[in-house]
Structure formats: C-alpha cells, structure tokens
Length: 112
Length: 114
Image (cartoon, rainbow over all chains, first blue to last red; front, top):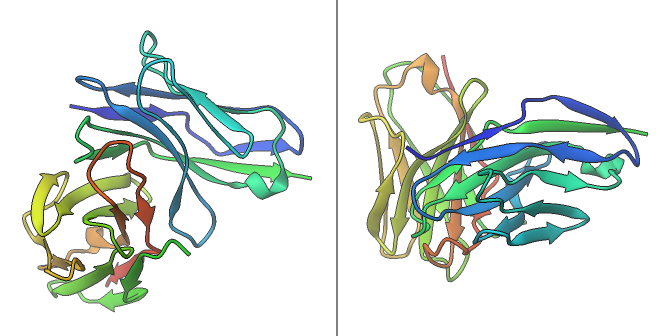
C-alpha cells in the first residue's frame, strides 16, 4: 500500500543553519505530496504541496521538489529561524484526494 | 484559527466506555477527515466523509465509527475503549476531495483512557 517514510528526529540546528528533512514515498499511480507543520499545542497546517512530478512547492522560505525518479519530496530551507521550531510531517494523497498517508513527523528545534 | 472546531478539547474516560467526538468543518467545506495521532504510531488516517457519504477508510478499528450529518458536522464514535486508544484525535476539512485541495485541521481532542 501507499506509505511515507521521513527522516527521524529530533533535529536541532542553530539559527541560520541549512535544513533538510528527507521524505520518500511509495505509491501506486500519481499521488500529490505535501509538507505539513505542527506548532506546539496546535493542529497541523499546510506548509507546501506539489501535485505532479518536477513541481516545486514553496512557502515561507521552505521548498520541496516532487522527484518521481527517486520517489522523494525532501524539505529544505536555507536559513532557519527560532520560530521554525515545530514538528514537520510529509504526506501524500491518492489521486482522488480520498485518502492521506502521513509520515511519523520530524521534530525540529532551532536554537539562537 | 483554521475555522475547524472540535469538541471536547479533553476527554478522560475508563476502559470499556463509549465516547463521541465532534467536528464542525470550515464554512463551505464538504469533506471531513478523521485522524488519530499517538506517540508510537504517528498520524494515522481513519476515515473520510464527503457531503454525508463515506469516501475512504484507513486504519479504523471496527470499534470505531463515524458519520457526517446534513449540516456537515461529523462525529467519531469510539466504543469498548482500551488503554491503547488514548491519543489525540484530529479532524480536518477541505472544500472537496480533490488532491490539491488543502486540508484545514482542527485543534484536536485529547482522549485519555484510564
């Protein structure tokens, strides 16, 4: 079945460091891919998405490219801030948007 | 604030009991998704309803059931509760089931089974 595997955390970085969180997926057909972020005590929020191969999703300085050849959707940010401290979830949906699969989440802490 | 409301915020109950969690989607959203978040299993998709009809089932136990009412709010019923059912339960809503349609998550209901 469809699934998502993402880098385990926790990840601790200094402010202004480069961030990469790896995400790979297994899916039949052509899924859509997402990154969601969960701040402490809150629900998940969509960070970015890509719906087809080679699409790049971007938002708030974060980027991820849908790579069909490597079945990956790695999250990157060039310079993290303390306010980026949160849990990040990689997810995919089937083509019809009926069913979603989430990774286990990667906790990021950015220290000043 | 995502516009999705969930009640109650916290729920403490005993094993063997039955509880109902409620979700009101954002105004205009027809799809409601339910998820279970636990420390050991991450975020698990449970079930999806669109405009009152069930669209997809994920890892939902037979002891759990859900429905979406004509006013589009949804309820998740959990019965014969076990300690392992303790988790954070989220609902999310979207305009439609289209894959590109963004899901908006509620703040969650924390269920503790003692």
